[in-house]
Image 1 (cartoon, each protein chain N blue to C red):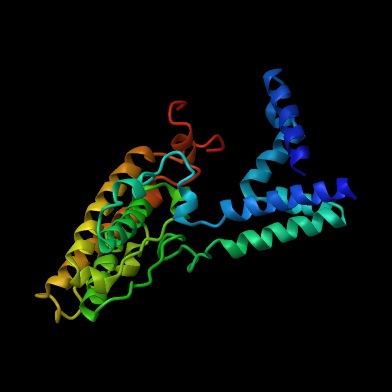
Image 2 (cartoon, each protein chain N blue to C red):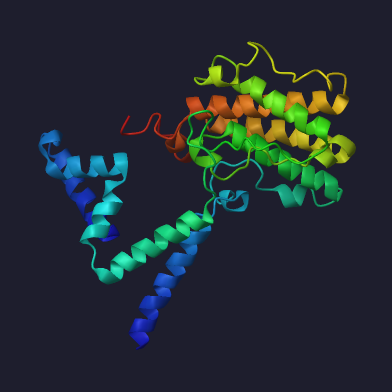
Length: 164
Length: 123
């Protein structure tokens, strides 16, 4: 499968340097589509013989098992972001939870309305507001979540890519 | 038979390498060119265990915040021990320092997509 793709790319390179109209080239269209929606893997699987098909399926299963699965669909927060509050004393957990929600509730994040309960920073019911641990956890969680969401939106994998 | 064995052995090695590279852990991320904490074990060898733990956790969170979407897969954004953070000065100070160090370190290198973080001079 890899050899086939490499061959296709070599052909593609030759044709593009010869100034042949790129969009008329079926090969180019095939490869661009492959990169866009991963149909390449599926089509390769369908074309592969029984032995290779088993191998490809095995690799995909192992890859999926070894990687951590995203715990959300990426609608309310970035898909790789884990919103689970880390373990700790109650005031720490409350601080982390509120700080992170406050960060995601800022307007530079597209889905901020989901986290804007009171239209401002989130401090819960105010029980822990004078607690040092709470405030420390709040400020750290705020920066963690704000920077995470900010860089996720601004520096996505496809930005400045050849297909952009 | 020998030929077959070689063929299968090569496949097995390839498979193992693939699993390792796809295991999405900070340890594997260190093989990539632009990460912050490659020399961690050398520089912190005389520090206390809590300090080292705090540095590792803080750096993981900072790296997740400063990196682009590809590198984010390798780091957890909630790697912090709340009990130690609230009761252990070594852990807390180390965590905070490591967070900002690794965040800035990754951020200045990853201010663009994966392409620029790998091939920084091209673009």
